[in-house]
Image (cartoon, rainbow, N blue to C red; front, side):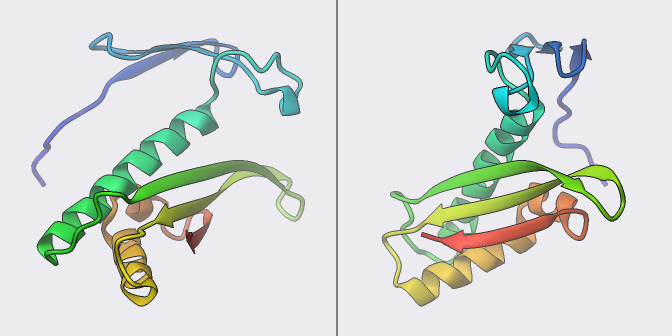
Length: 138
């Protein structure tokens, strides 16, 4: 395999600290959300993962649509990443919902594009079989 790009970031303080990318484009304060006893200021790993996955998935929708010669210029993707407690395994795990709006296409075509995108999006492929993912066409 040939590397196309490598992002490098450093975290200090974990869920209560700071994370920075090596190139300086990203520098964020990491704080636990109120739901986990934190102040709710700053951001958290789940928000950052959701933002990255939503952007990557949206880009993948556009790539597939371009190949299929379809217009999806008004489409959008929302990604919900949840931190879950797995009682059976006594561990914390992630789950996700990808909500896609593709208003330009008929519902059957939009649904087909949504599922095809989930097969090619790098984030979706990286999480396949590792976390529960729900795909929703809005």
